[in-house]
Image (tube, rainbow, N blue to C red; front, top):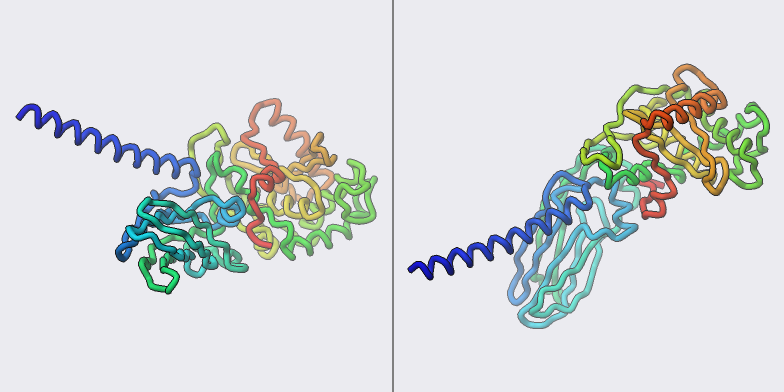
Length: 363
């Protein structure tokens, strides 16, 4: 009897260890992305001889999805097998959000995995400003269109306004920098009319780095700043950024509107005005960075294409009708003070985000 109990306890221990491994493995896969606050879900079934398991998150931050597509981050996994070898066609889409992605696979008795990141429907993010309950649709058929698995599992799409401030997501703020939006083109056009009023040296047009001195680069950013001040009568709204920096394990969410919305409403908090300025800067080919200090953000721009020197602009000063060149001088001084006092939380370079596959949320 004692021997049997020992064997039983050993078996239970082995099963607990194995289950613990899978829980930890799944948890690590989830925490490595640190994008959501819900666990992964698993949906299994299928008509014999086929067996299917679908692994997917319960919710997604929609603002991050374009970069997931760009880098093929495996958000959804379909595990398949068949007691009788056969060719299967797997179709996956998020209802009302993505196109259908199809993979043709050869199923055997050995479990295999196919990863899916379906491409977005055109312009779908522009209107996704509230959380949207939808579903992940998975259909598996054979070559004769016989259905072996069909399931719609609940999936919550979080509003595209929602940024989750956590170290692993720091570059995702680049999704809010939208240089190709027509509204940004209109801003840059208005800014060009202010070039002649900027302190010399000034270029004849918004030329980026092309044949431009560092002073001419500064003049272009001053002109963009002055267009917000004079043409859009932009108003700064006080709000704190809940981001503690890359060394922190804390996480918080924040609603951040896109630049075209900020231009429409003619007001925005510091991070919104900063990504707006960064969008216009990137549109003319300049390198932008977002500097975050405790609860606040402002713009940095490389005045030479090699990123060897940056100048700074803080949009908070639009409320006091401060001109772009004066805002540049005072923010440069503030940046130096923050450096000396070691109060800079993070510096996020937009080109780093692009190199990491993080695309503008809309074009």
